[in-house]
Image (cartoon, rainbow, N blue to C red):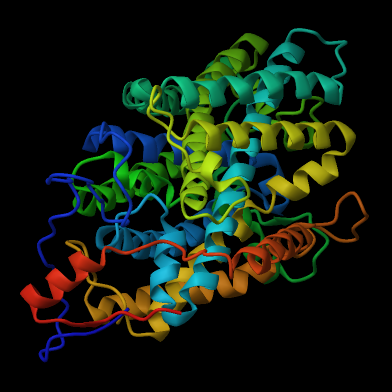
Length: 532
């Protein structure tokens, strides 16, 4: 689909009629599909989903000890700031595209459009990469929650030495609990996400207060400002501190790397062309500020870095909180404070992964596509697709019992997979000079778009490679980074399925051609539809 802009060269923001599905007969939404889901989310609840699914401060805290190897406390802080800048740019490009094409397929749909005549294959891979990224992300959050539970138990049982199967049992209970909430409580999700928003904001406020006040009250004292802001500590084995800094940005990326989550609910709220960009802004504004304040505060509460690295529990934040409060009970209280919002994050990841798989199913891009792409009439949600996500996470849990290295390889590829899916729609949009997209209410002028999108694409192109390097050297089979193997293997797997379906009627996401033609008439834009 090609278009030429006005002679003036300005990108217009036309009025749209398809979003709220006003009409008779079969109602189509902006994705070109029949509207099957209720538009039950308000602006507040969609912002809540973005903030709870992102949950930046809790995600950053969950990997804080691993992050300390890449530069110590100042490394974590400055790496987080740097990666946040790049993800603000990615988020801006996603917000613009969601405003132009508000489809639950998200990057899958956008890549299919921006890549022009190659859209079928580019969009197909973008969709699968995005789905795998989100389902691995949901497994990661369930694993963090399971480790928190085991660590809470270990705080009060000094002789307890946890086993992998202990974590696995907790993982299964948490994973299926979150999955069942998404499957059978769809109508309650707006309320639950609003509760999650309160828990996240209250949780970070309480944690910051406790970690700021308690060290001086217990006599342990605060860490020095030099430790927090200046004392660079490279414990990775890599000789280049510049490379260590870049590789350490992965920890921050894991915390902020969810800019597309609310875009997968575009068909479940009114006026998505306006509300989705607002929700993305709210997600990043709240997430980055709370995480920045949180990480500074907890570093000032550290008084024994060696015991933090040597802690006996699977969730290292338990030891950091014990140091901050100088008590096991205080650590337990702060772990509960982070556990509750993280549970809401796991639910949000299941929502996003299930919606993403459903959109692939409804376009016949998956095995058993009629079943996966089905919307359950009773529960008004993609029940089957969400169930598949639960099954995949169960298989990942079994892998964890057999090998933590293999499990970490899958969940650790989340950022690489999601970045590849973003690159699949952003880079073609730049190369084709945005000619395939009719702009929405939120659109960046060219002089802003090209520097922002170009920098974001350059970041992803370079750092996808950096994030595949070993975390430390010398490395062993257990400490090796297998992200490249996982991404490559999964890409080969879906490529095989592509070869099977590409000539069997698969067309990919469908744009509303009638809507585009109406816009071309009303706005004076010439549109040519290309079919592969």
